[in-house]
Image (cartoon, rainbow, N blue to C red):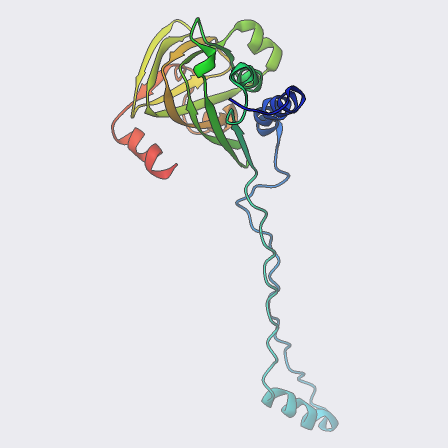
Length: 239
């Protein structure tokens, strides 16, 4: 348990609770994958072709002198990928779950459902990849809920693609029952209601705006879909 003063603990809680909100709200001005086009092309000047005898000597000299290559400008270093980290480490047992619940409330209402909050822990690392948000999490058991009221209020129109490296969950994605085991990939439509009960888990998650998936495949039936086998393996291998 943290030995910090109450005032210091409250400041830590406020900072921690803002971390995930910032990660979701932040939008890089340009895609981090696109390097700036700063190279200058080398241009060779075409020799004069004037037939005036007074300029023949100068023309021949220019033809015999190799052009001085223009050195390409070094590309500007790219900014590192926007990165944010949330952890309950260092928070008191009383404040740890409150900070996490406040942070994750931008996506889910989190509930411990009678579980001992003193044993709760959470660690989340998030990277912005242009319009995508990729995260790794390690979490204690809890329930995650998105209600129609939350959907109307926050307007999130994203798909949450997750693979549980350990643990898993059961629940309802709209009217569809879902059970996810370790090593499987699930897809949740955040514009539709859902409730999941997750055990202690480690996850990889990708938050994808709807237009990106709509351009690739039909998305109407994706809410609550679960996949295993090679698809899950590819997601784990490249995450």
